[in-house]
Image (cartoon, rainbow, N blue to C red; front, side, top):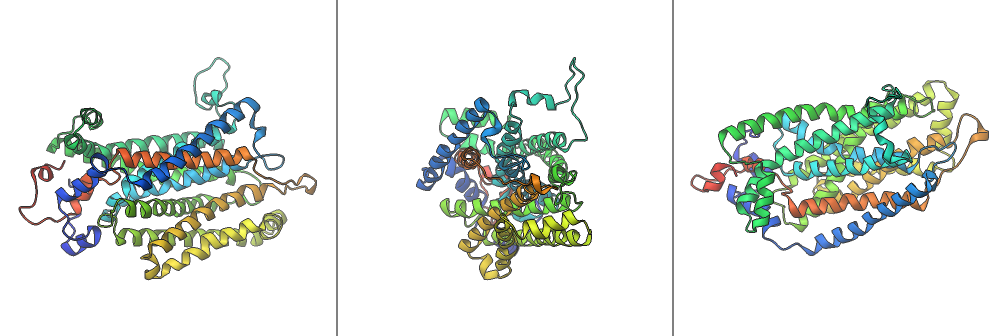
Length: 466
């Protein structure tokens, strides 16, 4: 397992995993969550309401298909509303999974191994939810294949210079590579589950998913090669996908959108929101399943530091927007930045995002706060709200006052907007709960390389790496 090892010394290993961990104890603790232990009550308390909320998507979808997208809030001049706000927000929170899995792997950062699996799952489910919004925003989702370059007798082809068409290819590529990367990492662990499962049905399912894995040197060699190649493919996607999403705005002429700072600013914001969501999920999971020895304080602190760093970059982006609004000497840009965002009917959202994204995370400078799980969890949720408000400000606040005062309008989401949004959140958390219940939430094969068992403690199972 040369790709996955970094030969940590004993002291470093203790900080990553905790003392006394062996291959056998790691395998047992993670696999027993799915194969032996009873499902904790907290699981049902989250999964049940999430499943009920997910049902709201069906109601909102059917209502939209029969009545049209007029049931949503967009109007003139606010042609985009919750649909694009939630699309950009959900795509953003998925970026931490790819960053943790791919970039930190290539940088040989061992601390990723305890959190990469559910971060990857979070990415996939977030992209699944995000894809619903532009699909149904067209009003005719059954014609979505028109956006693909398929030969047709009418000679109608997608416009490749349109950022919306770029979104189709960027997001679909991102989703495909993320799913394959996630699944390849699961293969050795599926073999472990196959060997430890008692039920014949479970053995058959995990046996099919592990693709005949036997833990041979040839299997490990091919696994590491594929994993490294996919990590290399995923790394540029972290930058390219949200940069392309930012083109939805920066290629337009709307004041507040037409700026070259958006691509790097959106990427930093995506990582910021993504790590906030990882912490939001990791802290309760760590507590419910007693994973304190696997998801240690080092993981929590490192994620807080990444969130603090990217938050400062996002704050710099806000300051740069204000500076360019003033320095450009463009009356419309200046009006949007200083009169529309800081004042007016939506000023509350701008000042709320400043508090959530810039002021609140500063508490993480203190080590005592980074080690306080309640504080970190609250700050993570505040950041998630702030990043959603950022999309609200960029889209709604920039659109509601057009170039001509006579065309100014006001946007308010309808109950179907809220139903669709809350439903996608329910679907997201429901899928996360199902993932935790049926698959290893922590990468067993990868986390074992951080253990440093004493000679003679390795079991045949551990020695063979399955």
